Image 1 (spheres, one colour):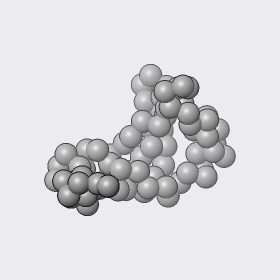
Image 2 (image 1 turned 135 degrees about the vertical axis):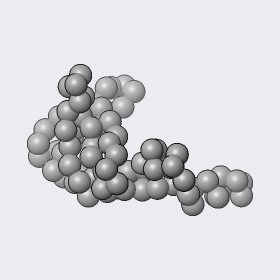
Image 3 (image 1 turned 90 degrees about the vertical axis):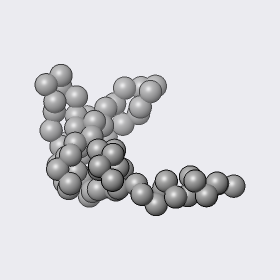
Image 4 (image 1 turned 180 degrees about the vertical axis):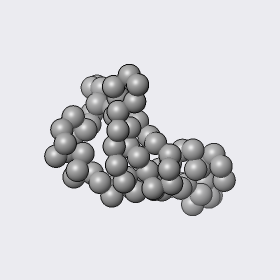
Length: 76
């Protein structure tokens, strides 16, 4: 059972769709979000398993997928 505090917190998360991808200066993939912010989408098993980010086809399949934008959350 969730507490009222956690339910309130979840209501204020800002979710944004992925509109593109680019690599950062270190060669890691970054999802470009509709809000203009970016979010790393690394494939670093066993910490994060995102093999789809390694291929163009995989990244294309995730276009439009909604991610929580932590920077937008902080601005609220």
